[in-house]
Length: 224
Image: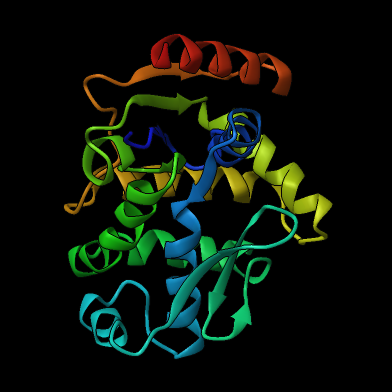
């Protein structure tokens, strides 16, 4: 019996990770946050003093980097850079920018592709990212494209950063969200786009529970 895979794509801040985590717990699937993998590589580039936008420089780091994904007793995905748990360290605005930049390089995407596909071969997975339904898992059993307005996504991100004690302001976060949308949609390697067979879910103005219930019902119907 084959494993089932659910792809959740969409722009930054649409709620992909939050929804995918809850859905995975509800359905008994393994949650795979692919963005965290790119964030970890982005952090590595910053630590090594390499400009994340420098394709050649980042490609030169690939043979040196050791990225590992593991699941602790809490059942949550943890990212390791070498032996260091960087799960929290990769959630800063600087690393977010670096992740968007390194993910634009074709060599990086090719390097990390097998890690992502390997998870789906061995587990029932819910995987979220920018190109899961179009590139990583084009044959996923369910494909969701989750979105919301830039303003709504920036508000959520701003509130999240405030809770973490990060010093920023809403206008800066909104500008970064818009800039990331442009980078992710305009890049040559696996640009952000909705797969033809993906179901569009817009969570603008929705509560967390409203979004979750809508997604859960959609997925159960498709899997049935």
